[in-house]
Amino acid sequence: MSVMTLGETITSLRKEKGWSQKMLADRVAANQAVVSGWELGRSQPSPAVIEKIATALGANPDALIELRREDRRSSRGVVPHVPSSQAVRLAEFIARYRDKFEMDEMFTLSAEDMGLIIEAYSRAEG
Image (cartoon, rainbow, N blue to C red; front, side):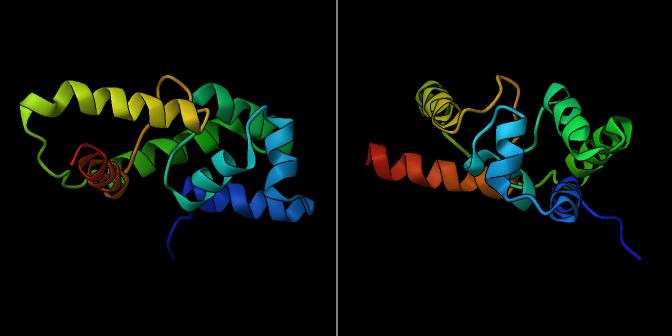
């Protein structure tokens, strides 16, 4: 029996309430795209936002934060290499990505998402 990820848990709790992603987003001051990212495991809410999610969904915030820790431990993967000459521009590109999707200052990306960002960055710079 496998343990659900944080995203799967948020999805399950949200659906138990009969809420759409937009309804949850409205209750935690986010947008639907951000909630979708959490549920799909593409990003993770900060501990402060997890507190809001737990309150909205009637869940134990400590349990959700622990799931976040477990997800972070298990999602460590191989990130494609970026030449140091492009690192600063890539950091700026990621900051724009974060701002576009209204993510917290401290957000995490899976290795897969980082690869997609690097690929998009390479196309934009190319």
